[in-house]
Length: 264
Image (cartoon, rainbow, N blue to C red; front, side, top):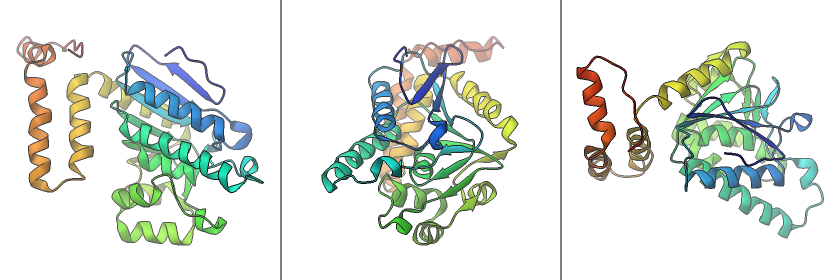
């Protein structure tokens, strides 16, 4: 990944882990049109070529905000047509994140409001700093969540809790987010990124085809009946039987060594 972006920092931490930082700290990392376009570009690229990346960590610049949602200063004065065009791009961006075949892990380092909360809910899982705050405030602005919030939040925390969060627009803490299932762990700010990168490295050390197939089986299977999900799981499983990585995994176990997976 050598593409340079205006609003994103993209850093290869090691051979297989990518750190993605939302980089508009002067605006609490709020998402303007440019950031949305760049996120869309980055994640759509991963659907075509992983470039050896096996896990991605997403965080925000600074220690106060992950993403404050849509940039309302940029949106001020937009015509209806301009607003709808921008939002269509944001929708495509969220679909690209959700469809990313590589595991995407959040390191939620501060406020995640509006679209920032929706991005959190769209990730595979997330860790949060103990000072992080979350909210979907759209109904207080005359709109509603439109980047997956009404779909991903109920799937993460349940329908009744999601309705309370979305219909009131009230903020909630990182501890609440963990109790309700939106994030997996809460850590001190100073430990957050290291913990997220450590779990990304753990995932990246596993067989990449296995990880991708397991992620797809979970994500798609959740939209199916149990019977259809079980059938789809076996289709995903059978993809790995003929891989070199399966043979390497068995060899390494029997030789009592760490496997060297190549993704083939």
